[in-house]
Image (tube, rainbow, N blue to C red; front, side):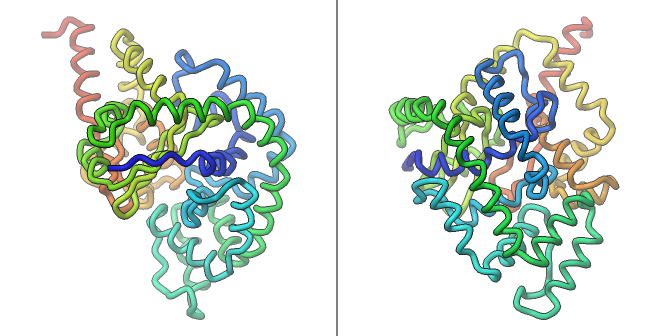
Amino acid sequence: MKFQFHLEASRVMEFVFFPALTAYEKTEKAFGALNYEILNSASVDRWESIAQQLSGFREKYQRFNFSGYSYFFNLMHYLGVKDLPDEHAYLEKVQALTKKELTEHLRSFLDHTLDITIPFDTNSEGFVLEAFQILSASSLDNSDKWKLLAILENPNKIRDEYVAFMEEIIPIFNKYYAEVEYAVSAFARQLEKELDPNDPVQLETMMKQFLISESLEAVHNSSTIHFYLLGIHDYNFNLLPHDQEMDLVLGINVMDYFLKLTQFQVRSKEERITVFKNLSDKTRYDVLNLIADGDSSTKILAEKLGVTSAAISYHIKQLTNDRLIQFDANHRKNGYRINEKRIKEAIAGLFEDLNIK
């Protein structure tokens, strides 16, 4: 196994993530699941400062922001960023995409991320009409439907608007990335020194609470792990398998957070209560029930429960952050499994708290 650290590409990835902070609020879905008692206060202050700086762009950003998933984040991975030197090169690459390439990416995004399959070839006359009908009838949030339909109808126009928007926020991004750039480089040097390609024990330790054992095996069987390190979104963690390699998106404070979270969980009844709060939410309980039965497609879960895909994405995000479910890297469309150990520990702790033998 080889480890490769992509610091220039990490900057590009951070840039693509950056505008999400226009909508930052402490209780907002993407951040509300974090345990603020153990977060680095400097990180929270930075998020709040960025949100204030970007407040004038909030309305523009909503045109490109989707509920529970990111079309433009997926576009970045479709393009590939590991060899890009900076955000300008990335935007040039986006700008160079043809209508055919944009349509092919949209089709792939719908299939792999939303489990929505368009049966027609993108070059056929019936593709756009069929896609419109399928999207309109889907369980997606209405706002998301219209945004996807706009991309489908005129992908070049939406692409141009996105590039123009991202170019506008570059000065603000540069200001804040300068604050974390050294920390990202230092973290990369430390991690590279500590990780042993022949014995990736630390990598396993870092991820074992959040990945099922089969996913860890898939990581071990990968020929190369590509590290993308984030200093602004420093609590972001994502694993993206492809072919025989893995992309690991890792915020520089993630491992410290995991360690503190484990210590917090050991000593705190609040953690047990967190499990039961999740179980007391009927929709979330039903999501867990369906995942236990082998369903983890956002589309299927939404259809079976009669809610929007955005609602399902929110519940999955919360269940993941609270560690009731674990990511399954072997699943073709990024599935999930029940974290049996976590739930059993919570129930055992409840019995202990109530002196039940």
